[in-house]
Length: 276
Ligand code: NAP
Image (cartoon, rainbow, N blue to C red; front, side, top):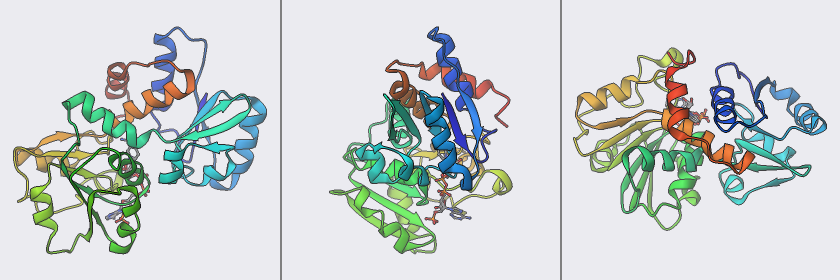
């Protein structure tokens, strides 16, 4: 097994999957493969020739890999992103476990159920599409998607059918009201990581209340400026470690039909030197 990405050395997936193989006494191994965008077609052909059992896909290949697969499951096709590929008797079949992993991790950690809830999602990139696809099946009451570009956000309406949906920009006068009436606010932008660690997707935290859940899917750093501010204003906060571990558990299930331990994976990620 393995993971293809560029970069890939930061990935926690080898640690997670090798932990599960070890815990379940399985004679398998999982390794990272650094694959540049221009080499993706050759890399997938090579993985086929080598008879790899399965692989994960990370930035920047989650969208482009679809055209090199034999089958893509309907959810991954709908969200346009594959993070897990299983070699099913020579056929490469793609899945997406990011969105379902996100929803399942909140259920596991907080017993949070999206049914009837009001939700705000910040950002409309690849991770957001997976999350919106899963939320589209979770019977929310309403969802507001906040983007730098309203048209881009509007184009994702199809992922959340039958739910009251609005797309707004950060400069909208409705932003604070949408945030204040949300049960859960989810940051899917990269603002808060890397060179943006002192920044936050929103500057004003007057909307935060103690009965809200504020999530940042960034896991490195563990607690972004956005999460720290939300917590200091009384919200319950959740970082991206749970989503990361749960998408791994769901990928492992596709790979092996076995259940890895979500709690073990969270623990190995938290304790690893990959975390800052
Ligand atoms: P992506 O496809 O590049 O999308 C990020 C989105 O964030 C963009 O589409 C954009 O949305 C918004 N954005 C980017 N730069 C911005 C800026 N300067 N100001 C405001 N908005 C900005 O990236 P991704 O793959 O979705 O990943 C996003 C984040 O999620 C990363 O930090 C990644 O590490 C994290 N992630 C975590 C997990 C996990 O398991 N915990 C899984 C996947 C990703 P708009 O154009 O709509 O503004």
